[in-house]
Image (cartoon, rainbow, N blue to C red; front, side):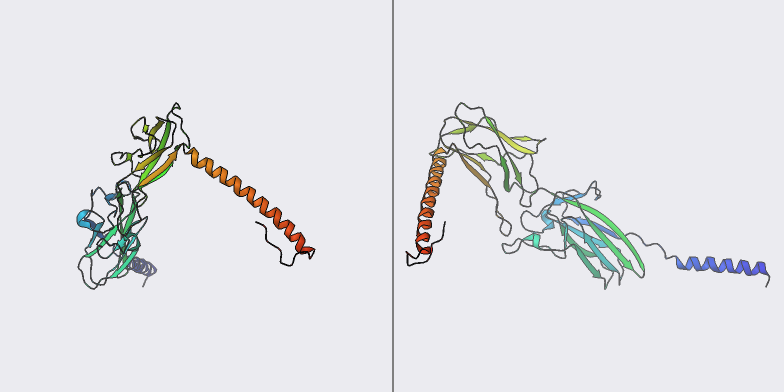
Length: 310
């Protein structure tokens, strides 16, 4: 065989070897949110599918608390791995509300299934956050693998907690200028509840001086808090009371639905100051007596042991 023919044959063999080593491309896994979403959107990080956070302590896609994931176009012996990020958790079944089980304790962020048939794989997911998290589906098939990613985020639940109350004064005179009082609201999972003043009440207390918020509760979109102006109609003790309806859900943390604080409570403050001074004086007198006693014990003029100082 001529050198030229040998060179051509070698080149052909190398080309064939290279082609054999290239595995055929595998289509990206097909999966979709087939139920439980509020808005399908494009399921990207910038435009995630939205679903309700499980504020009722349940995973029920029929009422949009969580999503159903349907993975299609599978073959027997496929290995399917599903993972999630953020607060997104995966489950193999829905969960009914229970006072004995918190939904946040259930699920995981990784499920692997070795398929024994080509049927669709159905899983479920929920999230407790209004920040988007991902769901990643990877399929391995006879040396091939491919991955698809979708994103979901939660829609905030009902106002559940009153937090970060600021600006309530310890004293406020009748003639004083109004004081701005602020607070924030969160749902049961700590997501900020914004611009929802209809469920909040400010109530004066029977038996204490009347008071008023000079302006209705408003939402400050820049500071991201609720605010109102507190004024006093009398320079007497009165109670600042910020309340929500008690929305506590069995199985989840109790709602922090009420904030109270007494303004102009000078009587109690004076009593505390006076009692503190009395305790200090009594402690000093006691320690003086103990020191004298201990000197007697040290000089053997007293038969008992030394006493301890306070």
